[in-house]
Length: 166
Image (cartoon, rainbow, N blue to C red; front, side, top):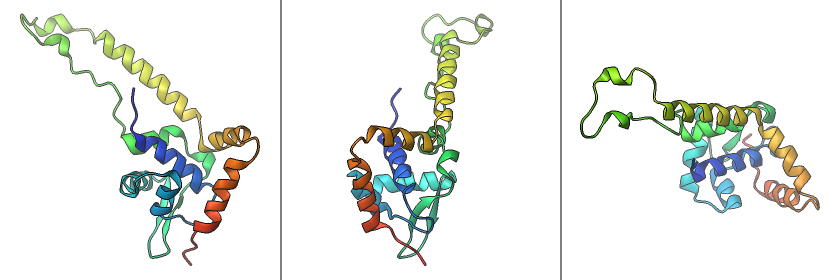
């Protein structure tokens, strides 16, 4: 299965927004700059995250984005579904019923075994994503950042780019 780059960008953006003060916001341009990605492409995903209730959009010239929920209330599945949509990765088109010398419908009374196996895998994949929150991810990153360089980079960027709308 291949997820779009938007999923990675969305997860990293949510992680970055977790570092804001309670009243702070970041612009889409600042998030895109920090991650070295296209603002217009990232904006599409930030809007999807807002529509899913993961982010809050603050309008105005000093506006931007911030988390709408606590990090322990946002799962990787929430983000993947917001960006990629709810459809399963595998969608059976019943090609076994096509081609030359088609069989009557009565030959296909049982569900396609391939589809059933793929749907089981999808359920397992989604269950794993649903168990992992942004808080879990951030905790793991803190353990990986042995010398604090990653955290220092993010904190310095937030200090310089965080906006306070009021």
